Each structure stands twice: as structure tokens, then as C-alpha cells.
Picture 1: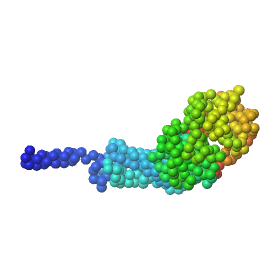
Picture 2: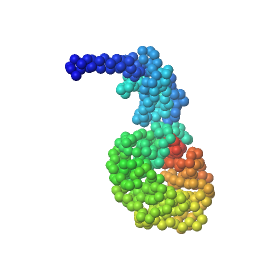
Picture 3: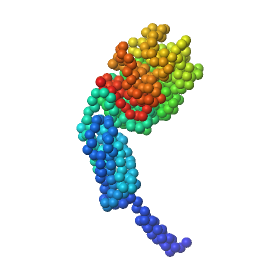
Picture 4: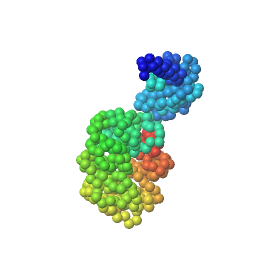
Length: 425
């Protein structure tokens, strides 16, 4: 091919692609100066922190005064909501809408609304405002929990009062205001997907991820190190606890894993339990460990840090939950007679709660001295002295209600949907 032919082809190609580009500007590739975003409605509302404002925030994108469809609009709240950004495309009338859950800051809050072009560049913005009131007594909604169907696997607490919550496979959040609001643990970020978070009696933190190991912190979550990546780190754990003596116990459907060196090494029994679900790990004052096999409704005991386990005979009760408090009182939940307690290391039991035909879980004595327990499909109960059990959370889901008592005695809890609530008493 001669040079004249090559030059002619190059000229044709340049003209073709220049014309093609000119015919397809797209709504997000126009003159940025002509793109404007304005608030249509939703600004100026007032409600309690953590509440969902009754009116949506509506914004409109125009180009040279005409509505633009399919343009990206980003909504970003303030305070503990600032790490969450919703991206919405405009409708044919140029509008995009988003809901606003108020953050935990009392007083003026803002929601920034950005028009974003196809290069992900913000070309214009507007600001909605809202006023947040302090929560009162009674049932309240926590600010900046995750308002979607994510499973919360557990809470834990440090001696400072800082709370942590793990969203399965998503992220770790913390609260420094007794559960009223929650912030992302940015030091761990969102790349490591947590299964569980637990704290030790000496304020160590352990995060069990779904795939990339166990993370350890001694500075209230400011920094993390990986202590191990055990074989069971695959998202299949059912429960994790750190016992009063500092042992870590993790259970899955068929076995128990125990660590006595802060998660560096793990002991797994050689013999199979023959169970379909193992839960309720606990430790007594003598260092004996316990779990419940829910498949056969049997409590198992280990006197050698999890190397071997022995089934504890149960002639009549069908055991589905177990717990040992700081005074070494044993509690077991059964589906034949309710909840029983023992003050002689399990030799004899007396009935505490008469509620048969129920599936109990997550029994505990909290810092207020009251006994709490969950009934699957019903919710969280509080037993205070000789009073009848009080239902705190009528969740109606066939999943456990996770809970913790905050330092100011707020009862912080969540069932299935990712919403965190608390009772301020």
C-alpha cells in the first residue's frame, strides 16, 4: 500500500470517529456548566436521632433548564452517615429520590446531593438540612446501623463502654454513646468480611472474618493484626465466645474449635460429635468447657481444653442452650420444661422459667444483674428478680435476637433486619 492510500485511510478514520462521537454525547457528557441540581422537597424536616424522616429527599437534575433522565445523583449524609453514599439515577422528569435516616448528632444535620457525570466527577451539588432531637426514655432506634436485611451476628463491649457490632460478611461498627449511634470501624475497613466480634476480659478484640483469618486488636479497634487463618475460617461458624479465662471457643455445625493462646493455634477433637448444630459455648470456674448439640439436645463437657468431649446424661430434659454466669451458676434451656438453673455444677437443677416447647438461645446475666434470654421466633426476654419474664423485642423471626447491655444500662438489641434498637431506661 502506498503512502497516499495510507494517508487517505487515516483521514477517513479520523473523520468517521469524530462524527460518531459527536452524535452520541449522552446526558452525562454534556457541558458541565449547564448541568444543575436543585432540591425539590424533603429539606427542613425534624425528628428524633436514628429515625427515618417521613418525607423523601427529592432532587432534580437539569441541563440548560431541561430535565435530564439517567443522570447519576449521589446522596451523602453527615456524621455517622458520612461513610454511606447512595447512588440513584434520575427518572424521565429529571428527579431522583432517597430516604434519610438521621445520624446521631443532636441539632442540625445535612445531606449533600451531588450530580455526578459519567467520569464520576461531581459537577454540581445541593444541600438538604434536617434537625435531630435527642431520644427520650423507652424504645429508641439507633442511628447509623445498617437499614437492610443483613444479619447481625453479635455485640461485644469494652470496659470503657465502647460497643462493637458485627454484620455478617459486611462490616464492623462501633458505638461510643451506649448504642444510640454507630460508626464504621475504618481501621478494619470493608475488605475484611466479619463473621463475629468478641472481646476478652482484658479488652482485647477478636474479629473472625469469613475468609481471611482472625484479626486482633489491643487498642479498642484503632489497629489490627492477623493472628491466624485457621481451616474453619470459611464463613460457617455458628457461635464464638471469649471465656472468663481468655479461651476462645468457636463452633460450627459439627465440631468445636478451642484456642488457649489468643487465636494463634486451635484444638479440634479427633472424634466427631455426630451433631448437626453445635452452639452455646461456655466455661465454668474450674476451666471446664461446655457446648450444646442441638441435633440430639445434649450438653457436652470438656476437661482438657477441647481435646475431647463427653456427653452429659439428661434423662428427661431436651437441652438446647447453656450458660454459666460469674458466680458459677449453670443455666440450661430445654424444649421440655423451659429454663433450669443449677448451683452445684450441674449435679441438680431447679426450674427458673416455665416455658416448654420453645427454642432458647443466648442466655446471660448482664451487668444490671438481670437474666436475659432469647426465644426463637418470639424475641428477647428480661427476667428481673421474682417478676414474670418481660418480652422486650417481639421480632417474630425464626432467627436469634442478639443483644448487649450498654454501660448506662441501655438494652441494645437486633434481630434479623440489621436495624439496631435500644431501650433507654
